[in-house]
Length: 171
Image (cartoon, rainbow, N blue to C red; front, side, top):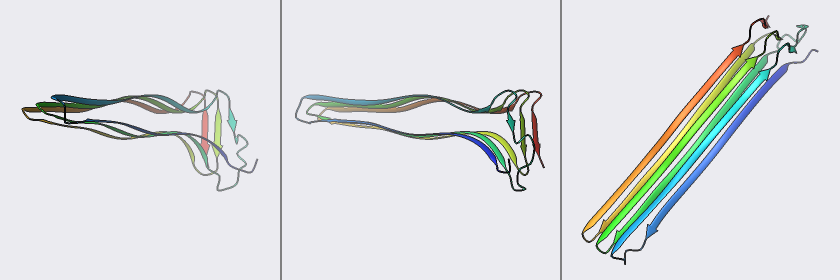
């Protein structure tokens, strides 16, 4: 045909998590704690299979672009905190923990043909925007103990590929 050909796969995540705790100061020993846990596993693919034909006649308009793109964007906000005030002692703890595993891929299968009259692109993109806040406050007549931690383990695999015997052409 005379029009353009495009295949686009997009995955967008916006993940907020929050946990806050506070306890009154009228007890002898007060403890407070909170935790957020985020587990995220994602697979985003844009693929043209084996022997696929996109504009194989190469008869598109002069301004024709062809795009095969896999895109995955993750925005995460994690907040954990605790406030403890005790008559004698206060103990507070907050933890924000996350494990993120992402795979993003764009691929052209074996024997496929992908033709365009201007730009032909095969790409994969992955973006991670992680904001983590963990805070604690503790006070007491004799002692105040507070601790906080933010721990994230992020594994990201991003790839673009063109299999053997495929043909990609741009005029």
